Image (cartoon, rainbow, N blue to C red; front, side):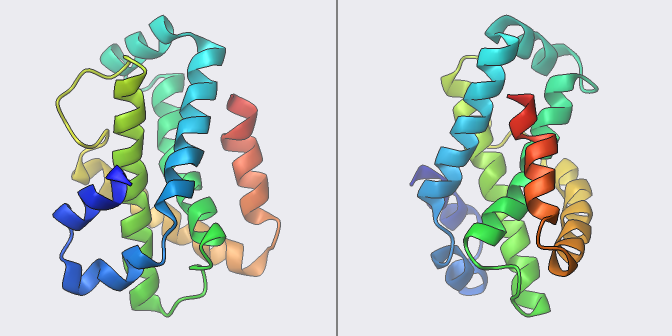
Length: 160
């Protein structure tokens, strides 16, 4: 549960503690490992590393953005967090997105395709640009039970 430990070291426990306790970080880490491992197997370590190192507009960068954006929805759904009150939901979205970012960096490093000495893949500024899209997806998901499943299939599973 390295991801949860990193979040506890990063986020104020008095604000985020209850939310972090509601997230299954073992599931989160395993889901991210499955996605990234599958993507690297399909596209090759050399290509993925080169795209990470050289091209912020690459297929790999696009996939990793979707891992956070769509993966956050999947984790929120699996942990029954989509129907929290607004303030708690915002905390949950931030916690999950940052948790995925940490988990992604860990997996990418373990696969030798990410060399930066950082606990996260995306900067917090970049993550802040992704968060409103997650908010929008959460609103859409509340009205459509198949919405998250379709996004996960189209933007994650069909890419691995």
